[in-house]
Each structure stands twice: as C-alpha cells, then as structure tokens.
Image (tube, rainbow, N blue to C red; front, side):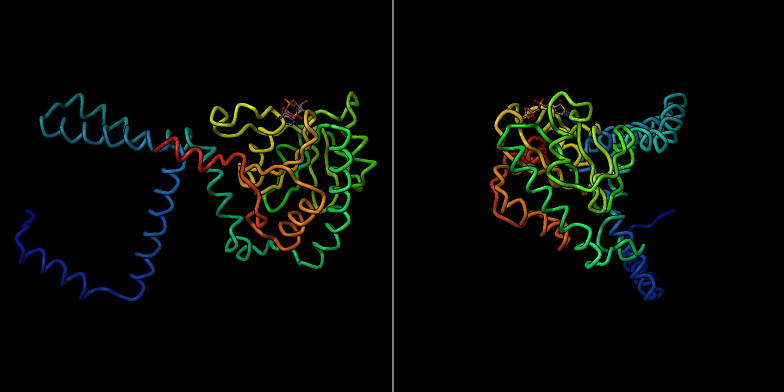
Length: 296
Ligand SMILES: Nc1ncnc2c1ncn2[C@@H]1O[C@H](COP(=O)(O)OP(=O)(O)OP(=O)(O)O)[C@@H](O)[C@H]1O
C-alpha cells in the first residue's frame, strides 16, 4: 500500500538522492531530450489530435476498470496495445522526416562522417552555381518555367527515380534545352547532385498542408515548397507566368531574386553550408509559421 504522508514522500525523495549516481544525470538528460523532441513533433504535426484521442482512451480504460466493466476495459486494453503499431503506420511520414532531420543535424553529420570537405564542394559547385544563375536569368527573361533542385545531405533517390537520368554538366545551354517548352524533359524538375545535373523531368512531392498555401501559387511553386519541406534541398523556381525567380528552403518560399542575390544565396547555402536564408528577403509564404498560427 502506498503511503502518501509528507514523511513518506520525504523518505522516498531522500532514498532516491542517496542512490543517485553521476550516470543518472545522463539518463535524465536523455529522457528529457526525448520527451522534448516528442512534444515538438506533436506540436508541429497532426499528432496533437491523436494524443488527445489516446488520453481519452486511457481515461476510458481506467474508468471502466474502476467501475468493473469487464468487456469495455478488455476492449480498451486491446485497442491501446495495438496503438503503438497504429501510431507508427499513421505517422510514418512524420517519423521519417523527424529521423531524417536528426540525421542531417550538425551532430548527425559529424557522427556519421557525412560532411564533405569544403574545397571539394567549391570545386564541384562553383561552376554549377554560375550555370544555375546564368540560366535562371535567361529563363526568367524569356518567361520559361523552370524547377531546379539542389540536393544536399538528404538523398533524393525517390524523386530521381521518377525522372530521366542525364548526368550532364550544367550550363545555360543545357538548362535552356531541358526547360524549352514542348521538349520531352521540360515538364517536372531537374535534380542536381555534386554540381552535376543528375536527372530531369522529376516529380516532386506536394507540401504537407497544401490547402494553407497562398492560392495564387500554382503547382510548380507548391512542388518547390513540398520538396524543401521534405528535405534540406534548395529549390529554385522560375515562373512561366511572370519570369520571377523564387527559392524554397525548409518549406519557405522567398521571391524576386536577381542574378546577384541568387548567387549570394547559393554560395552562402552550398559553399558555406548555411541552413537558413541569410539575405533579407520578404517571405511570401512560411508553411511552418503559417501552420502554427492556424493551429493555435
Ligand atoms: N509535383 C511536381 N513536380 C515537378 N514539377 C511540377 C510539379 N507540379 C507542377 N510541376 C511543373 O509545373 C508546371 C505547371 O506549373 P503551373 O503553371 O501550375 O505552376 P505555377 O506555380 O503557377 O508556375 P508558373 O508561374 O510558372 O505558371 C508543370 O507543367 C510541371 O512542369
């Protein structure tokens, strides 16, 4: 029987303190970190509703137990024990994104040695950045729609499989040919890896909350937002309608890039490996912040 008198609580507390070892601090810190990440994941996804449902089921289980409702408590117990599997299936995209995010964090990259030496990056990407900037300016002037994905730590094999492998050295002529209307590869996105045009005509994922996005944005811009939400890729869009150059990073689309601003951003992001946009651009759409506002 549990005695909850103040003396019993104090005794229990003192016995915990007496047996506390330095390793327990690490134990507590890890548990705190896991709980913090879970709460963050729940806040940022539709998991919040599910957690409310689980609390409802747990409360129902204890009430039915207390009232000795055998069948109801048996059914609730079985439902709850299957809950873990259901959560994994229902939240597969969110769990996957969270694990990918952990893997591409600075700690994860260092831990698994995935970082690429900066000289190597410069060698591979400097001519590619030139080609992207030159091409975007030309495509913009002729109002030719374009979608260019720069792959970073997260591999985009799933999207690459939907397109056609090219392995081409980037240049404004090659980009011009790919995106020229009515040619076989103009539809879809180009994916670049290690400074090379790896594939063209690739299909990109939709944003998680398509309905919350500015209605003025068409499918090309939405695909750019979706791809940048699902990975750490930089996605460059040239609008067929207005010729405007936009960039999506981390689910946020920023617009009105000139050649110089685009070059600055790409150098900053790719060569200096910045994870956030560092030039002062007005955000047209912020999927995460907008989502949070709507969910409040
Ligand atoms: N999921 C996707 N993955 C890759 N490319 C896509 C995707 N959705 C649309 N596109 C590309 O965008 C084109 C359609 O663009 P749409 O006019 O709907 O978009 P938009 O954002 O209004 O762009 P624009 O300003 O260029 O008109 C398609 O022909 C295709 O090339």
